[in-house]
Length: 472
Image (tube, rainbow, N blue to C red; front, side):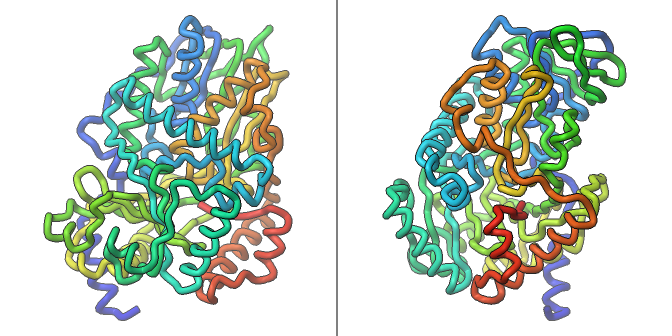
């Protein structure tokens, strides 16, 4: 990397604020007061991200008379739900390739349920008048290396043979650059209906409002400290109060689960993103992007990028940082060395945007599990349900997970609870130092594969055979 180029790229970051663009919004609602009394309810939801919000909302939609309480340790949407890229995908399995590999006999049902789930999100956004910039614009997976272009073409052919290619289109270099003009794009696979773009924090805030309008009692700045049986139900202790509930749904994702045995199934991965200033009309014209799709490249160390409602470009991904021991600290949310790397990659992709500056640079933790997609379960004789492990694709899938938790708490056999994906769990991560060593070796191997024509070494092949992985 030439020193001059580094100076040019880092200059673009000189005014960047180390806070999520989505959360840095003057329209952010005021937090609800903390719980300071002893509450009782039918259902307690722990966690005020998408997982908890959808669970509370769907619980009231299923049974308007049910008393529902939601507690959030900080403020609704402050963590992963307010720091992501705003891609709302239909996939419940972290992409069709992962789902087809792990659940080939169920993949058609999983794809159908995912499509219905995305339709349900779109309908809820309209029904509750949630102003979150929802755009059903689709997504293009782009190839930036020759081997990736060949792999995309082969994958599309495989999908056609399996009858799973509906709504997708293979784009050669000319066709993909007609959609978005980057000299690095060699091919693309366009999913026209399976992904929506949205403002993630506004979705969380809108869901909070909808929950309160339906009668959910929401308490913020109320961490759940302890979960224990209490009579025929459960009790949760908080700093200034407590909640007794017949049933409890845990939507805490990467934060330590109140059911301790669940903790080994997830590790925190820190992911980072940049947001540019709004593009001028000429700048936007120079890259095309008239159809406003989300984009992601096909490398193992991948980028995701998209346009905001005011025509900024969000550019994130590539580095996936696992802190030794799975420690979560506020200082990990900010990583200037990753921001500089991302800025360089941005201007390589879009050299015609030289001179554009970044206004925001931020990071946050993702709950990653070894199969890359959510897992589910119950505890305390079915009185507690949990869902976690969404691995960076939870904007949409958390609504499905909420339905699963409610099915499990009701003791109902449904098309969701009968799924192998729901009935079985991923492999847990090993204890330290084995987790850190294995993840570091996997990251090194993935980077090596990206620079060696996609060829996977013996370590990655072994991990593939046992179904273990690492992703963000």
